[in-house]
Image (cartoon, rainbow, N blue to C red; front, side):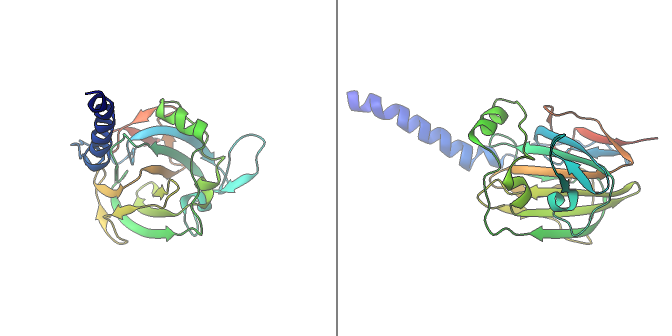
Length: 228
């Protein structure tokens, strides 16, 4: 009887882990994207961990840091010189599908490999994000060096790029979109087996509608809007 009591918590933990890994992360909730060509929707469920202005093709992690080329972060050969970079951290309990933030023609699909993927998060940053508090992911090597996959979609306001960044063990993504495809805002674009960082680069015609620390729903939350 004593042995049985000891084994019950272990069995319960194993069952919970199996449910999270084998069932819960594959859930596919119905999303109702707003129909508005002047908006950019969240590309994934998660926590907004960065909203940075891009000027001259560069951003700064903080006031005292060296500039970071946005093309390196977005995983593109080149990128528009001015705009906004928004980062959504997709945690283990979030929906693991990603979505097209805008509708239009996909003009570029670009994959960037990595010699060695490194963790996106320190232990402290991981604890903060799991508790719903933002963490500075621009300060990590993984954000700059890990494997990534970028899709760029043409809109009437300029090109919008979504970039999937590997969490540390490799991207492990199933993508549903190819270059030259025509997509609708809110359609699924990929499935991230292990979650990770989803970056959204929008041109200067858009103004962010979210702040660091906000939680967003993919395909529903408006994260940027074109100025009238």
